[in-house]
Image (cartoon, rainbow, N blue to C red; front, side):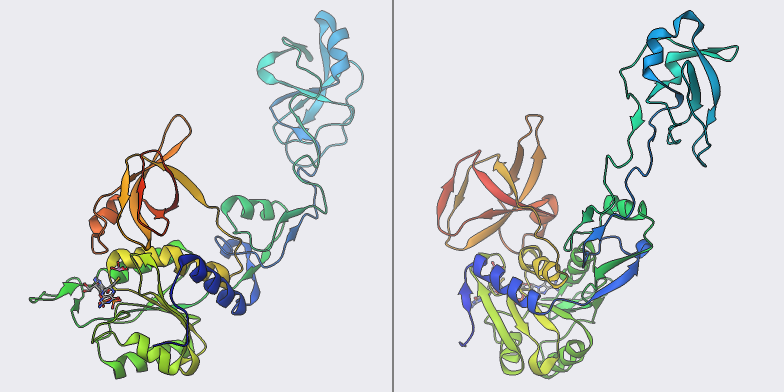
Length: 407
Ligand SMILES: Nc1nc2c(c(=O)[nH]1)N[C@H]1C(S)=C(S)[C@@H](COP(=O)(O)OP(=O)(O)OC[C@H]3O[C@@H](n4cnc5c(N)ncnc54)[C@H](O)[C@@H]3O)O[C@H]1N2
Ligand code: MOO
């Protein structure tokens, strides 16, 4: 097979994924704030309100004029009123006066400082301050977090709970987001049996479907799983044609390498347009990406069947594709130091499994798991990161800095 990139470097695969995703950027839509969690912003969000919107107290206590503390003497300050959080009263703190105030309440005119309740004593309508704070203490100034007109978030930002809260504080009820891709998930293989059914010799339980569903849900998607497909070209074609016309993305797993029952490459070559097949990565080498062509408008991402290959190809390429389809800003790249030396004995870029450890010295470390076969799911389950080891045979000393992809 030729006419498309094959046996390419991981970096090249990333470029192709990014370009294909950008060409298939999903439309923007307005969604209710309550439904926007985890979605990607399609436009910047501008502040129309300053944050905080007015000067207010950071503590329960007394609002006063700082200059009066030096002159108040033993008699203290006259308690001139109360301003609680809620409607702003028309209060003014005059010379020698103070106003009882609660956290979040608007600062009365004239006041410049708040004294905590615990540092004051009230007697006969007079307030004596035990410990004078510095001027401006416990006052939160209007606009110190954001000014009206500031950009609070950019297109491509993910709506984390904190960012949603920032938008809610502006009184927004809807946000402009990208529609997440609809995704159909297929597992293929005559050897697969669903958990719960009896297993005959040579068969094995389908474990990849649940893994993929979890990985996709973790990426904010709501995938739809098909019943497992047998290794029968006609059946695979008709199921993929159906999904290719109904979904934005079709993800398959298994049947994508060189065996007599690996029908996906030939099918996508004949009916679709292959963007790449085979990336010089381990595990996951036979991964294939294609546009649907006569199978529909969907993109087709075909992952190898080995369970650890599913994990690695999804995290390395699949998640990148769904990020790109939503215009999501690049995820930060993380690095850690190996806790043990590692001898890399092959040419392909490796996504080795490892367990992250945060030390009190502030250094992130990762313990490589020696069970590096792409069927060794236990090592993947005992780990929480993929360790990227560059192409080429190489000795990595303990403490070597490596890129990690946490999962
Ligand atoms: N002659 C060659 N053989 C292989 C090559 C190659 O280039 N030339 N590539 C190897 C690599 S690397 C990988 S990775 C695998 C990928 O093969 P396929 O994508 O065709 O996957 P299958 O053969 O269908 O399955 C591989 C393996 O995984 C098990 N499997 C499949 N689906 C599931 C599932 N849903 N749940 C659990 N386990 C599953 C399957 O039984 C196989 O053991 O090919 C190498 N061979
Ligand atoms: O690339 Mo395959 O995933 O090693 O066995």
